[in-house]
Length: 112
Length: 115
Image 1 (cartoon, each protein chain N blue to C red):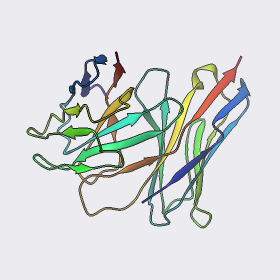
Image 2 (cartoon, rainbow over the protein chains, first blue to last red):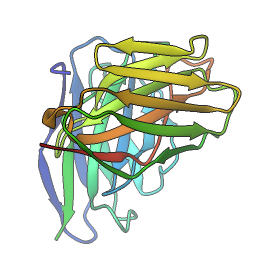
Image 3 (cartoon, rainbow over the protein chains, first blue to last red):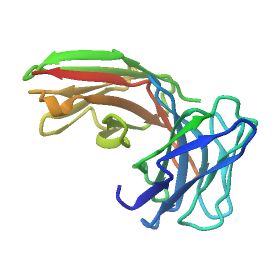
Image 4 (cartoon, each protein chain N blue to C red):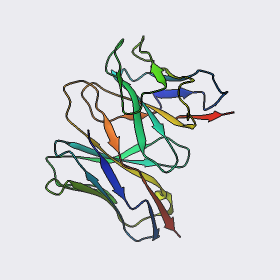
């Protein structure tokens, strides 16, 4: 788990603003994922990426965007189109074709 | 897609007693079922997992059972301790031809172990 990091720990967004959450891993994992966690709910998949320059939408991709320009990095942008962005955002990674996902420490996004 | 339901949403047990959390899944093709423990404000951590070709798996005080016919699986924690208090999530994974694996999570169970 120590090999996957997220920053910042807390992030504040003003209305109409785009914000970007960072996720970096040094585990040499091919696949990376972004989840959203709301209080009292399970994790929901936003986007995932299997290899560099490739990514697919998850269950709740609307209002979010991602990029995968480097194997170790998978940033998530929360756009102004996401009307209810307050949540705990978790990044994860896994080896190709392996089920075990390792999670980062998370970023808590709050709206001002 | 897959749908996972988890019960109960909250569970309180006395220290030393056993705790059981149950999950059902909708897609019979799911073949991998992990359980994660998440302490308050922390990241989820894998505690045990089971594949569809196995009916039960144990790791010290933790066990998971799988009933493929009924499409449900359960987490069993014996001799509970206060440090077991956390939110527990079950999940299921469908087979995929791609290299990534999409987890579908249950809604979580808040376990409280009372001293």
